[in-house]
Length: 196
Image (cartoon, one colour):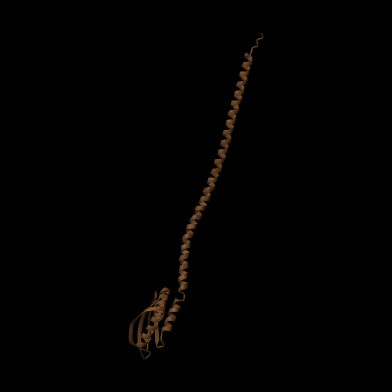
């Protein structure tokens, strides 16, 4: 029988296996290191991107905060402009108020009445003048009371006086100039009184 000594072959096989294991282990370690390096590089890249994005967002946030501040200022500016426009509207509405007041007084005044002074104190009017008689003053007061512009006509002075050598009556009246809403109410009441 032939005897074959397999021990050196087994020893060579084991050494071959050890070398293969070492190569496989080294390859696995190198592969793991490569994967870790790639993942680390990817994470570092992501982190850098996120930091750049954060800086960009902070800049954008500051810009938006500034714009929000400007918008808040615009709200106060809008209120200020609306207030000014309301004043302009009131002035526009009252533009002809003095003219209408004087026209109403002139239309109500009989020919035998002369005014010497006129004062307007926030809608309360004071009239001073001369008349031929107390009847002329009464007619003037009734005409003012009928006018839709005025009410609360009161006589405070009616006395005898002399003007340019003629015997006349000196008078002082006070009356109230109505607002547009009050004028409309007076006209409605007047038309309701006419209808009934």
